[in-house]
Image (cartoon, rainbow, N blue to C red; front, side, top):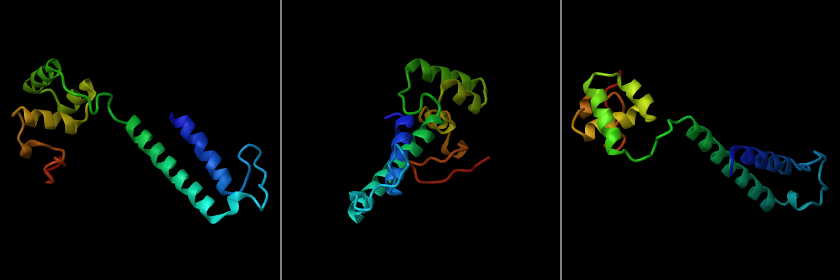
Length: 132
């Protein structure tokens, strides 16, 4: 479901919850099933789920393009070469379409960076590292 479809569905549910016809905006009859508490609860629950899905999609669209993708051997070698040539980690992250956190984690895994040298948190270890 695209974000446009999600937004359209949210508007329909909001209108129904308010007791209005989603197409015309006119009030629905008072004897409508929408006035039943169980139906309203279901509509409100559905709206909440769509809002969460929409928010997640919005956050995801802000992430770099390669988040969650596997590293190829060539990409790892490019990372190592850039790190050893003292290129700023933020530049490396941008070029690889990865987060700074992912770059640091990969360098740590390769033994090129220690946990103490990281500027991001290692959420898997459950400890906070220093920040710059």
